[in-house]
Image (cartoon, rainbow, N blue to C red; front, side):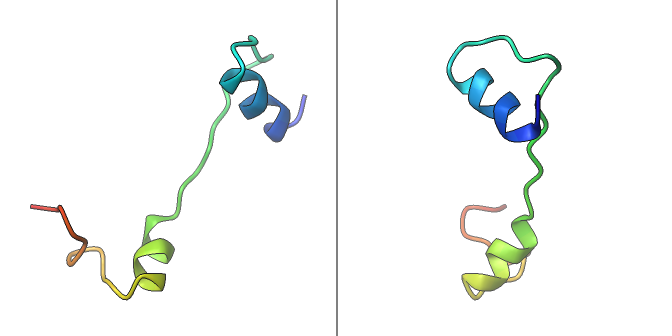
Amino acid sequence: MNGYQRIHSALHGIMPDRRPVMLHNFMLAAREAGYTMKQLPGRS
């Protein structure tokens, strides 16, 4: 089972062979939106 299949299974209520891990890169998303991580809306 590959990573895509693990995520797909978990989202559809099927038990994957092991826990899926989905990494996020919020710094890239913030930069694309024109913010730094310190400037992100909603952060205290």
